[in-house]
Image (cartoon, rainbow, N blue to C red):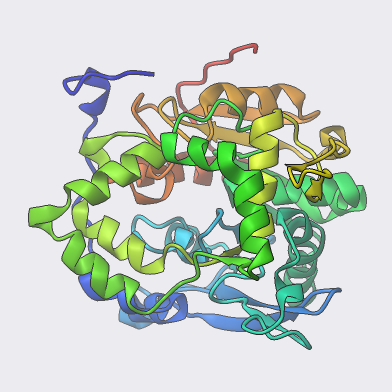
Length: 414
């Protein structure tokens, strides 16, 4: 989609200014949550294959929040899973009154936020050293779905005593649940619903030139990096936040904006420069080389399939064989899909293709701002109203509360 700078769809009333500080770029997620007056618990969860994952629980407000202290009252907890190269910071960076993690806690939900293996908060294993062992990094998002999500869901249910939970995922956080349900369909009985925010199951229509270039060069690039032992990609480094503060200062933020626009989509009215700097203090948060390679395969082939390791012909040229598809029909829980028309990562047609294929589609929500991009789902000035308020209404329906969402819902057949 091409949009003119004076596109009327951008003239949506904005939420109040962000109540966040530049220092937020330097804080960890637990420090952020505590700073803004909310209870935070840190749980460490061990997966079946030995990875140690940080799982954070926002169990209510403290008096320090400036509002009456609040404890969850809902019968079912909600588990949130983040996007590629990110962490559970996805859910809290925008601060109270905006970030989905805080809004859910304010609404009385027991909020649990997972961190995938290889990210800054889950860079641990019972035997393997991530700095010395290449074996630590031998995973893609397949293992994140099959092992991490399974262990995290089980831990939440064990601690809370709940029989089932709500699931909310953004981008990669959605596809890993489909992996789990395809491989272990019995987990449908542990879930109430899935809130699928910009679901990255089909991505072959993506528009960002930087990502497309990586996809085209992925096989030889992965082979070269693997040969020299570079299996960790874009870890979270301490010097990034100070560097971003200089490079992306208000007087010189154009380059940072243009990078964001190419990867995620262009929507200047929704971008807050300070929010971008805070975000870049937390992103990237680390991933494995195989994880990105797996993404390149499903983009290039237009197939939601398992990982296919590189093989080399006699002339040394890397190649791969098509891998088995994941079975989306095994995901029988109600699925609610949210998408933006200007999302460069998950094109709206890709999101709607997924919506057509899941067996229990509950609702499809097109974000009202027609210029809404991939990054807008977690960073936009008015995402609290355009996305999060609608998601809360959806959850209310599943928790037996009254009220239903009123949104612009458009269906395409692809």
